[in-house]
Length: 163
Image (cartoon, rainbow, N blue to C red):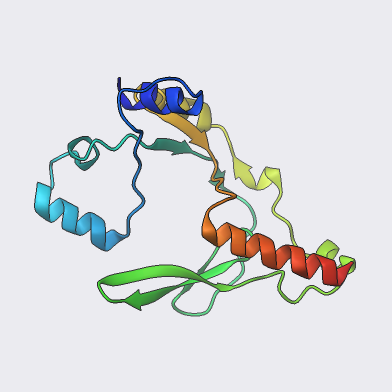
């Protein structure tokens, strides 16, 4: 089986030749892997990583809100900053734009991203190319990944206070 066949079989609860694999690694880990295997080696192939290939739209919306030096901001107004640790860094969320919301009116006043802030025109071609070898995901979804569970729990508690 190839990566695409294996991932799709696993999703559909069909037999596979081995367990499907994926890797999410920091820049430092990738640098160490490149140092070990060489710059020209396909690390995913060497490590038998199946993974998904992601496609998504390009942001073309209004200018993003300013972020303090050393931080980045996304279309949700969520800011992240690079936090060092032994061996590298992680980009950690540093600002939660809905944290100060106390009422339904506060939520209504929030600038929610809009679909027309994105250019979807290249996604079909990207997906067609990626699906030749891999299962394809559009967008990011991991509701049971730990950071999302913490966010969800906080959001539910906050919503209960607001309502």
